[in-house]
Length: 129
Image (cartoon, rainbow, N blue to C red; front, side, top):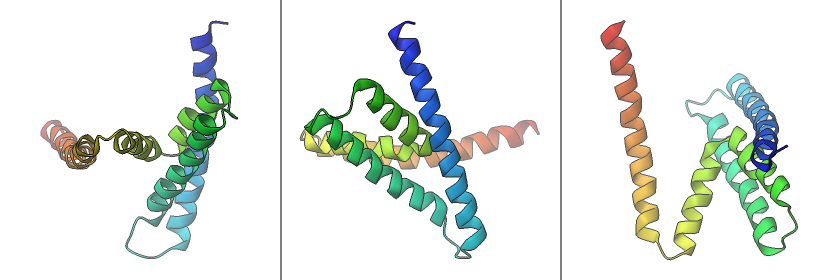
């Protein structure tokens, strides 16, 4: 089996597990917490960022994690759990590489343009509905 197909299957397996974990945490938070705050998503984003930080450090510092394990854990499990973890690790790398301005631009533009894109999508559907 070609390496790329093998890695895609590994990512797919991790994504399924991460997505299921995300759903369970969001379901639990919505059913148990009555605050007017998206605690489930907040917790997922923070937990995912912490976990991807652990996996990143293990793979960069000690070479303890193989390429297949790194793909499964970081792109698959964490990516399926939350893309916010990828967003935070990318910003960490930018800041570590002395690109704080680029990181700030990435953060602000992702949030602002993302929210604008939601409005645009909703407006488009309302236009044709």
